[in-house]
Image 1 (tube, rainbow, N blue to C red):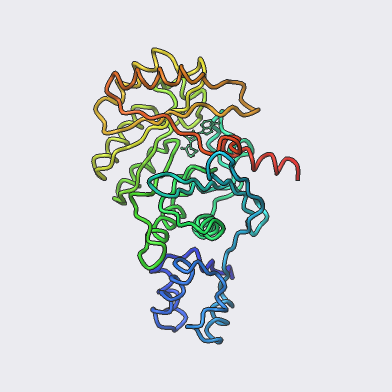
Image 2 (tube, rainbow, N blue to C red):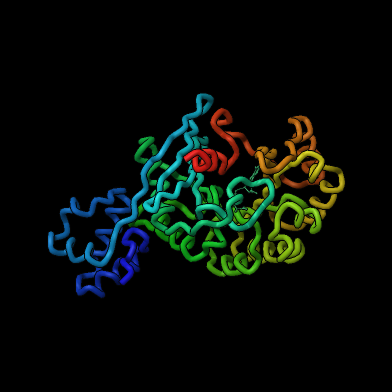
Length: 345
Ligand code: SAH
């Protein structure tokens, strides 16, 4: 029999689990709170449960733990990058950042990724496996415990495509939001996707007030397909329709991420088409100057050019910000740290 991953369960699932093993459902709540509020995974020291009950639980289930493999501290700000080692020895990356609006965790949702975006380091070996809900919440709890600071915001922008691991990501959101656990506001959760259209509709129907962030990177289908294989499956027109549906049903403003690549997607034509595309949707553009990786030969535009691109969008009434670079001294682009380690070891 496959053993159950105890700390990947939502509160309801843990209550049902207890009922199934002939225990009272409130035992499920005790365990849930212990994991997700006390951030303690050592169930043997949970005094509310009898020795026999702990034994009974651990006979059919196990608890998933991460370990810090390495930590990189920025000397410029308080950004910390973590490499965590999973129980099967895979390695994932997460980032802790301090912003005025609260401490933010950038977490991974998969080991590797199968989306194949040309400029992204996380996808170069394809998808290795999905992360479980416990492996996602544990990235947050481990960083909170290690820094001694609370995390109020989370962005699903580490390695992986969250909508390609839909069920586990939804469980993660349920667990981290639960008031009996971490109690994170849904409004403080951002899910970034390369644009899996049917999953955007599915997510809209969940009606969660999380922020959806779309990786657009080009307003032209042919150019977008050159850098993002997913664009061959879903056209920009289909993607925009799904985004409008999402915005209307959740009443949330969307974000469009736009990685600026020199001479690839930073010209006048793109500006014009991008502003036409976004003019009647409640959205905000986040410009990300490319972090060059060795597998992709292109460069990032210089600062003046990035600012000009921003200015020209603003002039066309499109709200737009440039992503602030956090921990630029330790910040090889996302996914690169993990790769440099796995290449070596
Ligand atoms: N799979 C999700 C999360 C990816 S990471 C998605 O596609 O949205 C978050 C953002 O960083 C995405 O917009 C992604 O396209 C962008 N990104 C990835 N590699 C990058 C790089 N080398 N330079 C700049 N942006 C990059």
